Structure formats: C-alpha cells, structure tokens
Image (cartoon, rainbow, N blue to C red):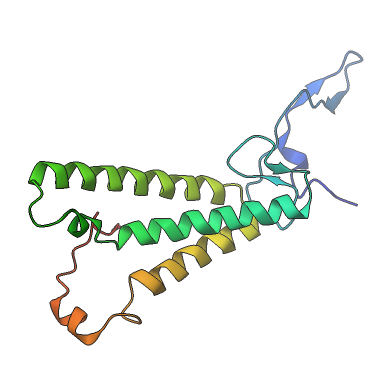
Length: 161
C-alpha cells in the first residue's frame, strides 16, 4: 500500500557504495505539493499536530477556523469609533496601524496553514472566512438604516486584490 501520498519521486537519489542508485532518507522532510486528506500532518509548527491523534488534529482545525474568522472580523470592524470623537488623529492612526498589522499577521498564518496542503485545513480556513464575512461583512445582519449610512470604511480598510 502506498503511504507516501505520491511523494516517492521527490527524494533525491544517490549512488550507494556498490555503485547502485537508491533512495536515502537522511532526516529529509517531505512536503506535499498536492492536496491530501488525513489527520497526520504538520500545520504551522514542527510536529503539530503530527501523530498526536484525531483530537489534536481537530483542535488544529478549530484553531485555523478561528484565525480565519478573526481576519474577517478585523477586516470589517469599526474599533476606532470606540475611542470616541475626542481622540486625536495620531492615537487613532496608531490603533488603526496596529489593527492592520495584527490582521495581516493572522492572514499570513492562515495562508501558511493552507500551504500544508491538507484538505481539512483548507476547508476550515475557507469556512472561517465565509462565516466571518457573513456575520461582519455582509448585509445579512445590518439594519436598513446602517446600510444607508454605510460609507464602506472600516478599521482597518478591507483587504483587496
């Protein structure tokens, strides 16, 4: 049975002492280059969740979901208004910059997790972004008066491609 998930040809071959070529695995880390399904994987950190079982894999999936959800919340939040009208532009700018840096950092973590090529991680990242957008970015939970007053600005501004 093939447990290499199509990775057999990725390790370098070398000549052995008797002149025949063979595969030698000297602490080589194999990385998937296509999507695969399974709970034995590494996401973000070396050895995590690894071979720690389905419960740790489920925790990793929940973690990725929450990260993606937080990216959407930060993309559509209006936290600067909580500072009050009397706050200075400098303070508001510093807070906005910090929120932007946090959002970008979380988005990069989600991207790196998806680069594990695990199908479950990909689906949870998309689900976290989708639910976050549904709750914070779509018109589903906005009142009609909010939509009329909406100037399409948020703290920090939404990501755009």
